[in-house]
Structures are given as structure tokens and as C-alpha cells.
Image (cartoon, rainbow, N blue to C red; front, side):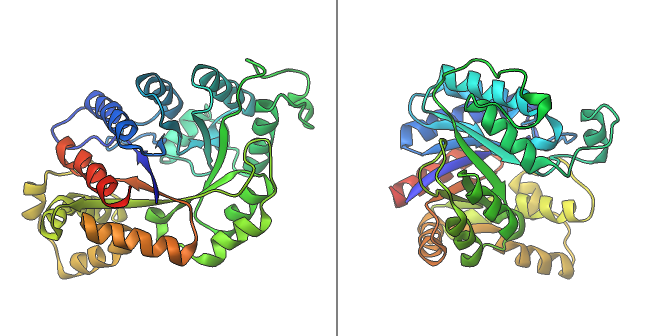
Length: 330
């Protein structure tokens, strides 16, 4: 099974945002050494929980620090940016790291209403034309002349670079169809809603049309994972993430607790039920158990690659997740 990495640069308790970005670099270097396929940085705004607000800049740094692993965004939030700017950013990245860059695009805002309006300089957010913007960005990246007049009188530089792979992030049948029609890869966010299904992935495959960016359909599925040598150790490391998600559902967010603090966190019976239900979004267990589940789901749903997002509190425990899974699945 091919494995890849999704990182949000989590700012765990006792660490700074700068620490989180340095740890992203350490993770990229390890993923490169272990043989992971790609590493993507997410985009988050207006939060003290994650430091990954400029994934395209982090991607440039990570590409310079690694040799073989593909580097990209998972993803840039299209609503905030001009297609021309995105095209020029990713063509520049690809000029520096030809054959190793992924242009991953998402349609979510990546932040709350205050950050959304700040990013749009107070203008109403442009949320109804994101597939058109994606089309325009792809045309500009491929040195084509877009149909939209606003963009057909300029070029996106640098020209004539190795094309990045293009990917559309999603969690629904609609996004799967749109990705296929554009000849883009499809990345399903299983950790977002836990609603992965074979019909959704089949819809992508059935609508796929080869493009300059991708000759055949490619599917990654993103999982939140906490794995360790034993299930008990994994449960210990997973509890801060369980509590963070619980608090987020209640409209509260902040830094991840330490595992020790999480053990003493007061939980109601309803809280425990919600944590249990949330496990369909968060795979927790020994490395052997998690690896077996990933293999079973690959057979069941028919995807190509599992993308792992893991947020134990300590960097040692986090890196160990990726080491253990590589040992089981490579």
C-alpha cells in the first residue's frame, strides 16, 4: 500500500507555532527517508491550534529539505485567491522541484467568519465559482489561454515548467465527479465526516477524463490515525485529540492537551458516547490493527493511497506513528 502524509502543523500545549513548523520539517525528512509517497500541508486561519496558514510557502521549504517525496498542499483554499496567483505559485514551486509538486485545491474556508472576511478584505467571499477558478488555474498552469476575459490577456510565469499534479479535495459525490471531469486526482477526507463509500469513489473513476496533469484516476483517502506498539499506548496518546474534537463540536477550540492532562479531563457520559462515535473519524490502535484496517478499507473501497494525519502530543510519538505504519505496510 502507498502511504502519504497530511500535516496541519499542530500547536500542542507547551509548544509554539514556530516549533510546529520545525516539526513539520522533521516529519517531511522522515517521510522521505521511509518512502512515503507525498506530504501535503493543510491551510488553517484564525486558530491557535494549527500553524499551517501558508501551505504553499511551507511546501517550498519542505521541497528544499527533501529529495524524493512529493510535496504539496492539502489544500490551498481556492475561495481566497486569484487563479493567476495560484498558477504562478505552483509553477514556481515546480520549477524548483520538477516532478515533485502537488497542487491540491479545497473549497472549504479554512477558518471562521472573521478570518474569511479579513482574507477577502471585507468583500463578500466568492464561494459560488470555485470550480471555475480551479479550471482557470489549471489552464494557466498548463500555459493555455483561459476562456474568461479577465485572465486571457496575460500569462502565468514561469512558463514551460514540469506540470505539478493537480488534486481536488472533497468529501462528497459531487466533488468526486468534478475531480474526475477535470482529470485531477481525488483526495477524500475520511477524517472530516467518516462517510467514505464505494459509490463516491466509483463516481470519480467513471467520470475521469485523462488530462495533462494526470493520465489515469488516482485516489487518496485521508485518515486521522493514532497508532503505537500496543492499543493501550495508542488510546493514551489519542485522548487529547478526542477531547479537542469534543470541545470543537461545542464551539471551543485551543491547543491539544498533554496525554497526562487528558486522562484527568472531566467527561460526562454523553461526552464519552460522542468520543466513541467519533472513532469512525479517528483510527486508534496498535500499528498492526490500524494497518489491517487500512488494508481492508483499500480492498473494500478501491483507493490507491492512504494519507495519514497524526497528532500525538510529543514529536517522538508522532514520528513513531509513521515509522510503525511504514514497517507494517511497506
